[in-house]
Image: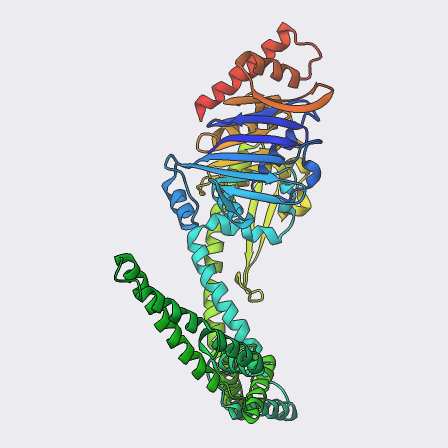
Length: 561
């Protein structure tokens, strides 16, 4: 569940922290009080696009922090698989800091990227925004909803189907490449053979380019190397006042007094070792200089070979290893082009086999969808009846044998009739705004019975409804809240009365600055808020009694769940 929300310097919020509870958490307030900021801040923490203008005027940054309590072992296992550092007490902390130039995420104190945050949030929370109802109008979304209801059995089939479809497309593309005329194929073969022989004739060796580059660099700078080595030779052991001469004199001086003091003997021995090292060094640098003779022909051959290798690398991959890989592919391509008819027949057979596998998987997916469509339609009909659709027919049509795709060959469409005697029609052409809200709530209710997502957020699920229907929606939210944590923004007193915990969102002026605040209300404050929502200008005893009656009625319904 979502334990708390901490917001700082975001829009009209200076700093606030909300501690949510189990069951149904209701958020209400006057129009324009900033209710959308609360849901917006949660979305921001979970990866929504952030605008720097959201940072409160005068502040350097905005901060949103969500704290989740994860109790489900299955969700913990998935989080561990995602390498998310879940705390020992099951807490998962997601934090987002929004600055003018950049935005950063952290999960349990470790820096994260938006994809990680979205992967985690998909396990922990489901947010129903004000505009999500419209997604039901688009038939392309109906298959995704049905597949989500179908669960793991269909998901496994779709995973295999996607992999096979990728192979199928590759085979189809490869076969299409062979369906060219003889002239074009001859040109392609000629080019492939030319490139292959060009690489083969070079007789490349692994690491050869690095060795030649080092040798070329050495030979190109041989003059400077010899001059520097010569000076080092002279200074360390050549004729004249060299380091070796002076160290030799120093050794003799110390040896002349070593009989008088043990320390002098130790220093003489140490210096004698240095003298020996200098002599060894001097011989080594002399040999090095002798080997540095410049050979113009060797230099020219090295430069030519290096140019050839670099040209092949530039043409065929950037490294000798990639040139080898390209050459192997050329050999395979040449073989295919020379035996195009045989290879085409083999490819055609493979494609037919893969298509047969795909069609079998599509049929399996279609069977599962058809079966689950019946279950989902029945559960949706029951849920819609609970939401005051008095005479509703709900059907999910699964039309198979469409074009093959990574999802199968089905076309899925939700059909509905909300009035007696009316035929079933596409959901998008029938439902009104208020009906869409209830249909989406019904879907959320049905899906919630199958998923493990612990927290659900509804932003103004009450759009376009009132009266008895509002009570039905209230009851449905109350039922969901028995097994899930529900956070709901509402304008309707019938829904607010069902609250297990009621929060007030209010706008006020502090030091000539407008700020939004949110706080949990006491029972008496909740009564006053319900009285306001009932539309009364004055909070009279009668209005308050009406509010209390709403709360008593809601509590009575809860006992029936």
